[in-house]
Structure formats: structure tokens, C-alpha cells
Image (cartoon, rainbow, N blue to C red; front, side, top):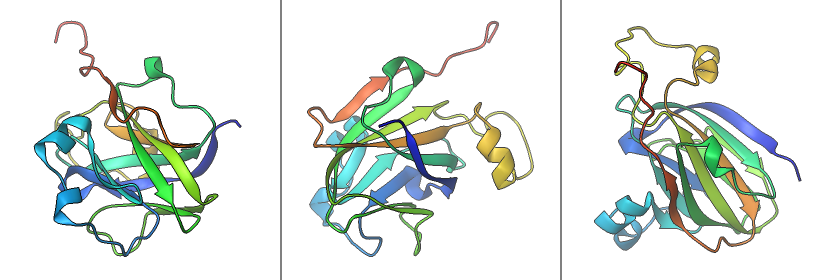
Length: 175
């Protein structure tokens, strides 16, 4: 299966996290929430309600959701975080922890998946670039020089979870 785009959009990642879940009304227990160990692996939650950590201070990200049969290629991404995701409902939703309604929703086959959160330009946003003004949705969708995410869902439970790739932000010559 080639990459199949299930949706894309602008997400305000409140509290530096993107939620991927099968039920937007679900809650998690305190023991499933963030801890030092979960922060170091890059995600928290339960298999049906995952929270993926982000870094840019403005928390304003372009996010793409892709169904595919293969994990993302490590050489193409600055960071890849992998978590087991399970959909009991046959749905997948992408949202902020403060959203009542998901930004993205798609139908998938119920079951277990590897959720690979691939990211570029961690910590870089308009603020860090000294830019003012608010980008439109179409402008932010084209900005590949600021923090953005592609979420890959791959059928089957992943063998390894956590931060698989974590490279520093590339610097420009003379910086």
C-alpha cells in the first residue's frame, strides 16, 4: 500500500501535545498521563488514546495523517516517535487535548497499528524566526521550514516504541 492521505490540517497542540485517539470523548487515568519516563520516550496515554509531545512554543503545527504499510524512512525525518495505537471503533481522530471536536477523523479497520509521528524542524516557529502576523491555513501548509508533523499509521503492533530517530535541528552555515 502506498501512502494514503487520510487528512491534513492546522492543529493548536495545546500543552505541547498532539492527541491521536479512537474516541474523542475518552479520558485517561493519572498513571497513563505524562511522567519523566514517558516524556523521554516522546508519548504518553493508552493504546486507544495517545499523546505525542511537540516542541515549538507557539504550538501551531501543520499535521498530516497517512495510512501506509511501511514506517517512514528514517533519513527523511528529524524525529520519529513510535507508539502502539489501537482502534476498537474503526475510527482514528487527531486533535488537541483541549478540543471538543477532532481536527481530523478517518475510518480505519479496527485493530492494532504502529503510530509513527514523524517531525521536522522541532522547536522552530514564527516566533523563533522573528516573524509577526498569523499565517493562513494554506500558508502554514506550505511552510516546511517550521515544525510540522506527518502521522503514519501502519497495520500491526510495532515491535519497538519510543523515539526511534531524534536528530538535532540542522543549523545554517554561519549560525
